[in-house]
Image 1 (cartoon, rainbow, N blue to C red):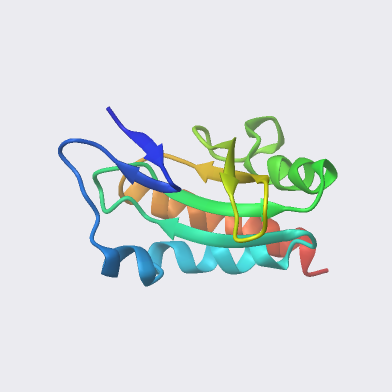
Image 2 (image 1 turned 90 degrees about the vertical axis):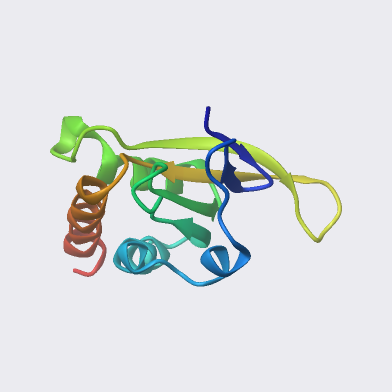
Length: 129
């Protein structure tokens, strides 16, 4: 069963190497770049899942209205692909105390890569006007 520990997806069958986590996966580049164009969002980590785990981008958001804007781009009620969601977790950052971190997660495999590009284009169409 997949779980997220310290911001990294792990399970008994799958362990990502440090090198895979440090470099940004090519299928994540467009969506990470577009998410960072949304004022108040900063991506911190990403993993395309390599066909074995869900597509995932970890990020910070400065306020709930920022999350609402991102949610609009992944919400099927507004024409987005199905199966994408935002999760929240708490993590200890280098500064004292716990801070919320967010995870945008989607499907596994090539469909996720295609849909991530669709979401990136949706963000680009609205945010880059």
